[in-house]
Length: 166
Image (cartoon, rainbow, N blue to C red; front, side):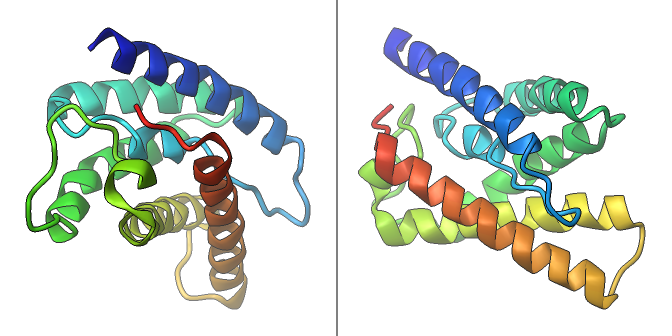
């Protein structure tokens, strides 16, 4: 249990630093969001209420970097609320092992691609819609596609470079 906590603490610090560095790569109002990976990789057995609280404060920290007032906190809570639904949709036949991180190491590349793809897409949709405050414009759609694609690439690179087991 202690190794799970320390692994998530290291991941938390690493992803906050990477997100802070990615904030500086702002081109044509396109951002790359890596911080949802922290939410995605939290252990399966975490209590849902605790998950929501952790994600809220994590999102507030990202809001402090971006100087936004609750945008990323709301997106993090939205991803945390959608996570159990996505996990139920993608549950393997044998079920999930309790207190295991939801990584490609434990559940495979295909499963992780589906899981992260759904949640990162929902995160991107949430953030871009709240930033633009409009639906169904070409710029809105283009931003969603580009931000989702870049964020997924970085999330997958993270999985393949670090190959987290915890």
